[in-house]
Image 1 (cartoon, rainbow, N blue to C red):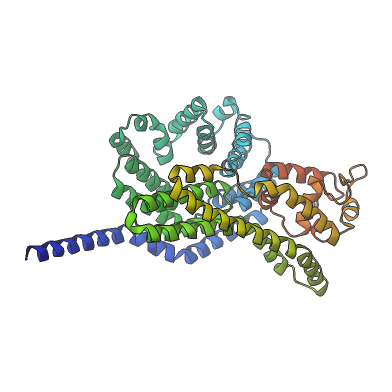
Image 2: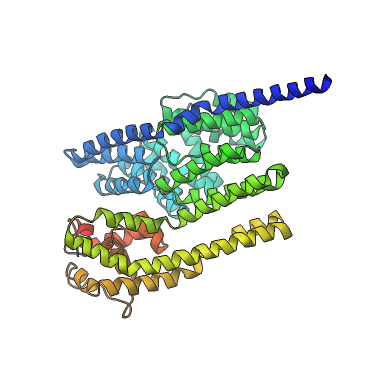
Length: 500
């Protein structure tokens, strides 16, 4: 009788825990299921802003429209956001307001692209006199961007000065409150920090997403796991409503769920995080997902009863990372499909495909074999040397890094084999004295490689930077000089190159 009662009690306790968990994640799961609707609503709003940009009657209003677009795209797609920031740079009238806000928008994106030194140099161009003359909105825009960069590069004095300025301008903003209370967290006074955070004012769903995220972090630091999960879930729910793709909450939530053994739900959230990271083109997120893989391995060692299930999840995450690593290959194929408008264009695409298919198939198969060997090595290492050896291996350089120079040589050779007169055709559109030269026969210069990728349909600066292993800022600089010295400085230079 006693055993039956004890068993019944355990069953009731497990049922109660399951119901409580479902109540925490119910609204988030519903929001995830409805992401397609929220994405459609986001696109409609985005189109309205694009129409306002295209129909703006003068440069001043066009700059304002570009700023509105950059604000919306910042949380969704970094490439598109950088496009409109480029327009802001071109349209700005020289006023302190437009200059400061343009720099703030650009540095926010450079922060996400992990170009911290470039971002810091831009921020240092803004002097205190210009800030003192600016309105509150401009100062807050600067602070929202600057504090992230200065915190990341450990310039504590500049970070504190920016946070104090932000606090003076808007002491009810959750971001300003959280960072202003850094000293409270350092001395572990989380109760007071939570009390301050609850005084935040939320004027929009975006404010709510940020507020719930910071509340989750404070509860997390305080060891209140259930409350932390609840607030992270609420923040992620608002991210779904807003069609945010560059978020923190769902990623942190998946890590916490791995740590407490909820592998199935954590795996679902991890897959959504990886999918959205690819959509947004946030390269820094890739490193965070690798850290999440380490969390999976930790869970594998701690939870003896779930070894097989956790290992399957780790393999799945590895496969997903492999898919992200070869994503740029698929982008090329999608571009070809879109260009199939005429018989001549179809033939050109066919030529490109024949020239590059064998190379990329060989590269992909070789990479898959190396990943398979790497997985076998990981399994062997974890058995013989333990978790620390696994972490050391994950910190080692990528197996692809040593192949990059060879890949560029093969690209040059294959491209010139298909378009042997490409360099001559490009020079027909360059000003006298600014013609481009090949470093040696069969080799393309950096400028020619950028134009070759545009010819192949890869026109986004972020994607070009990823393929050529350089910063987005460098690509923009090269392209700006090329267009300036072309015969079409005010025309659609990229379209002309694509049609050569």
